[in-house]
Image (cartoon, rainbow over all chains, first blue to last red; front, side, top):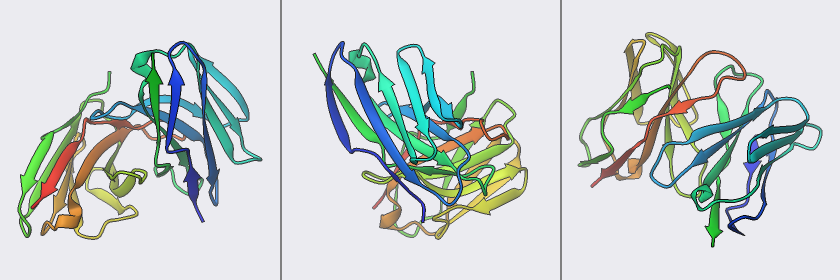
Length: 111
Length: 113
């Protein structure tokens, strides 16, 4: 089967670090995307991982372990504007187009 | 910057009506997608198109059809709207390629009464 799991909601403090996990089970794997979605807005692309390891992009980093079917998004120096949902999506090997989406993690930042 | 524009942010229709949702992208992307987004569920693919006049069913195509007469425009049609089609509808586009991200419009919140 194909399945993606993320925590439903997380809370963190402004200035802190938070890690949002994503585990997946797919019949084939061709890369993993992270998107950010503010309430009432469009999802926006954050990162793409296809090889194992950590990809750093400013305050945001994304990690992938293909053998474990596991990824995380690491957000550092949290700001209030980081309050949003974070969506994990896996690209299927058998499709050049289709993504399998997790339900998203709602991140709440408190002062 | 890629711009994906959906014709309406909010739409209210009645059961049984034929409903058209329009999406236009300005970056010459080959691929276009229609999703619906419901609380607690991931984005679910309704239909996608990889070229003009070409379309493929996604995971939940029942009750929907699509049209792509021009490369920049992808329309979603609810043939006979039902209350269980009340949802947020998101259009996206992308270039072809494994690492190419999808770019989304702001969504249409559709209510069927």
